[in-house]
Amino acid sequence: MYQFSRGMFRELTPMVERRNGGRHYMEDQLYVLHACEGAVRRLATDRHYFARPARTLFADVRCYFPVARQQQVYSIIERYIAFADEFLASLPPAGCDAEGNPLQCRALTRKGTACQRTPLAHNGYCPSHQHLAETEHAAPAALAA
Ligand SMILES: [Zn+2]
Image 1 (cartoon, protein in one colour):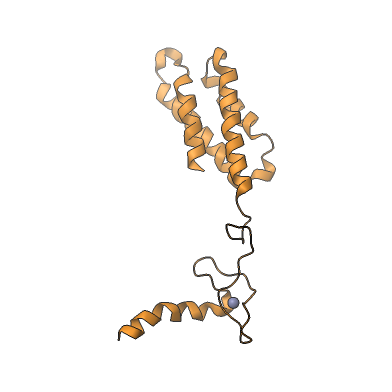
Image 2: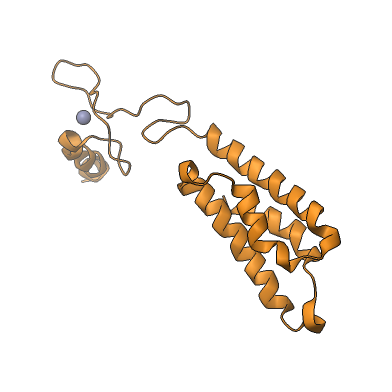
């Protein structure tokens, strides 16, 4: 998700206003960066309760930009939020592979059919078949001995 907040920030940062002779320019840019990252992170983790992400982010950062740039700032934010949103919507739901098929344990049952249980992410076996993951890693060593 990093690429969306960084891309948005890269386009916004040249427009940040140098207020008070630019004394807080770095802090202002940093604030805008953190606001972009926060909005994209929330989009990724809390989408259903984040009703108007582009408007919310714009309201957070608009005071750092000159009045003449407000429309442009809003368009950039809206565009990147839409990219990020589209990207997130294209991801398979949790518990599915990249094609959207539900993940299954890699083991076979005693009947010789594929185990239907949901696997653990770290080794692809369900809790009942964890012992197979251990023998899998032990096998090459046993052959070498
Ligand atoms: Zn299993």
